[in-house]
Image 1 (tube, rainbow, N blue to C red):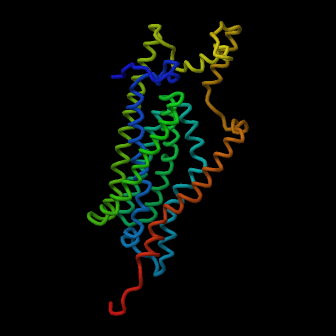
Image 2 (cartoon, rainbow, N blue to C red):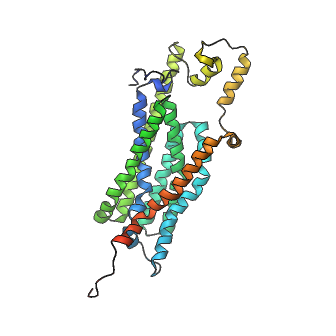
Image 3 (cartoon, one colour):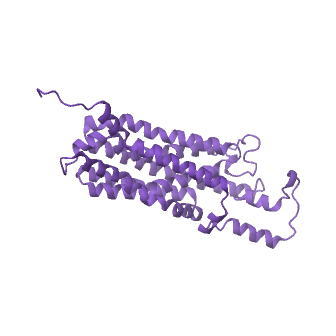
Length: 320
């Protein structure tokens, strides 16, 4: 079950979810759940040439196809300039596990619409599918990060998030190997439906995370009632009650009403206006992410087509 072996020194001192061995199972579930969307997101880029041969051509120029192909990523990206902000607000209000399951269901629905569009050779349906896919994908990443941060503390947080990103990206690597083979052997629609199947598995895993998280919350509540440990949100309460400086012993609250109000404020969620309080380090990190997303990912989306055109496609012999 939720074995109670303690974490390393300095980790999980508040006696919350990070004190449970179940955290490693949750980390594995979040990694596997995120692998599905990563796989499905990269299916078009791995099938650049197969998709061109499969879809009906609207003109003799290949630029028409390139424009349509890149729109698959544009309709995904445009809403995600804003949506993660609202997704983060939903996560704050309803909790990471439940929001992760809801966003996973949205991703699965979008992938299914995309697969149906490919089967029907309809670019418009494919765009709708990618748009719906994008409605949940990036927000699902926000929810996954929240789940991990709730289950890990101290020096384990960075490690857990690193593992999560590394294992999740295996979905992209697997896609690069399996999608072209599936398309060549079973047809292009089958490769897209494989992505849909994996996103459905992500929904199942996300629901399982919700169940595990709920069981852990109930167990910790029983511990609190039995006097074995603090309640959920104990870290915030401990910071409010502790003198903080020098790691001294906690002292009684001089103003219980003020502490209660501060606790309620800390649990009331975030507001968009909070962005004004972000420091220079945050904006430097944001700029770094913009550079990476603006340079690396767009190239990766079209790299297969670029490299094939440059290195493998040559003029046919005159006798052909």
